[in-house]
Length: 471
Image (cartoon, rainbow, N blue to C red; front, side, top):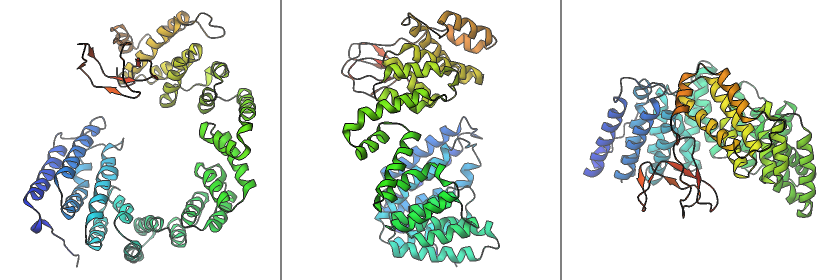
């Protein structure tokens, strides 16, 4: 028979009222719409987050907070059935915000075993994959002995599973707990049983647990097995292998893998790692050789372009980007947009034009009107940059380029209509703002100037560029 815990009898009146208000707020949030479709799901996530934040402010008794959050997780079905959470916004409320609050409350409770049993009971009817995050938080409030007790219970539950599919949820929880107590052998046994064998990814994760436990030698052995299965190409392998080799004093292997990491992802951090091994006096020579290698490669790499800027080789950066302009993927706006802004800030106008053109073409290729505001912004930047360019060289001049774009996309009336609207005015005389400050919408400054939302950028320039969300 399952134990039932009810802490409501000894709650203070303010806590009791706060818990009631929280439950009502969650109900009101999910009932705000008949259905939260994908574009509306973030709205639901915000309302749930606000309800949780209010609970955190109001409820002082940790057990009351734990019970309220357990009840919140029990309502996962009724919440997820009301929304299309394709973007994961609502799921993140459970996996991040609520989970962190739970760990904080649980760590303050006296009866940790009781809370562990509550978390276990919650896993019996988990259909949306958000309840097991609380298992990942066990080490925040349980000691090793308490976690080992939970592992024993989970192993018994796994035994009752008729097949591996029924056993797997419990085995995954055991893996999580094995990681938390840094038990390499338990994690390895459980992973092999769970996956019905071991592959390169499994060996890498097993090695990580052994290494965290202080057993670098076994970790090295498992990484060798991962390499035999093709694991060297996996992102997690290289840095872990370097750290393990360093712990074992394998200096030669540390040097080799450090170069592999650097060549795969050239940046200031990976360069500094190399320099720390070969000496500061080799920095200039190393940069010189790497620049030559980058310029000789036929495939474009955004990280290599950024590296050229980082080490001060701006002339090479512009040449490299222009030479590879046909390889730029405009849909990679998360990386290309900052690159374009960086190039523009450094006065590399031709290179900035090339990147903004790729972004514009990627935006128009989607043919989604809700994203056209970004495309309009790219086109306006191109209009402004064209005035800074006197020699176009091998790059198509601005006027001809715009004519071509208009011919190719003349049917996208929504885009061209947005282009005809007046551009928002940028304010260039703002002073005394720190880098990354944010000006809120519709704020009037001390001089009576109405300021729209903008992201401040630049070091002491007193100017800003509009962020992607500003238009």
